[in-house]
Image 1 (spheres, helix red, strand yellow):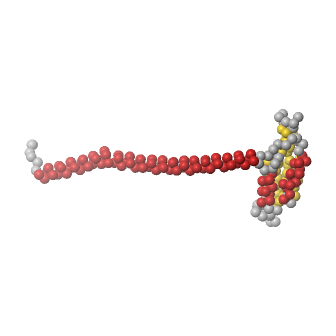
Image 2 (spheres, rainbow, N blue to C red):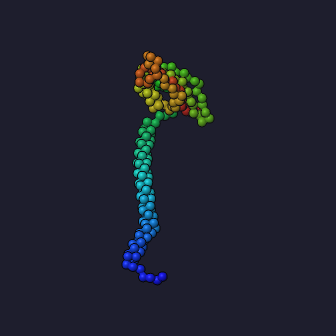
Image 3 (cartoon, rainbow, N blue to C red):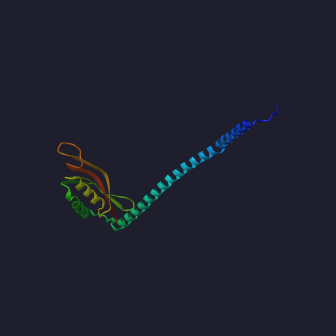
Length: 187
């Protein structure tokens, strides 16, 4: 069966060989390279997204560092002091000034407590009423930045308008809180 192939059979075999080579190239070279390129493009996009996120995070951290530095500078300029023990007269005068914007207020002084290091804690329970929320906020801000070292705690803000609806934008504002003032006992 060694007959010679006709010209037509040779052409068909050549076409079949070219098609088979094309299929082998497609399966073994083109498809894997295409898949690798698509995967590389996805990874590149993910890396670009991560770079943008990290750049934004870095800018935000730098902004936060600048703000902290500014706050530290302001804190040292406005740092409140710890007065010596029995500063109650000055404290009452300061509280009277701070609470001047309140329509009424009530102060409840508890006995002061001294720890082993001579630090005296004077806790004052305070309630006050203001006509507007901004007045109450200003009073709290002045207490926070008081010239005598203090700590605000147990803060509660209530508001009721004439119809009994709780709304901070209208009606009187009632604030209750505790303020702990610190003093140093020199003995």
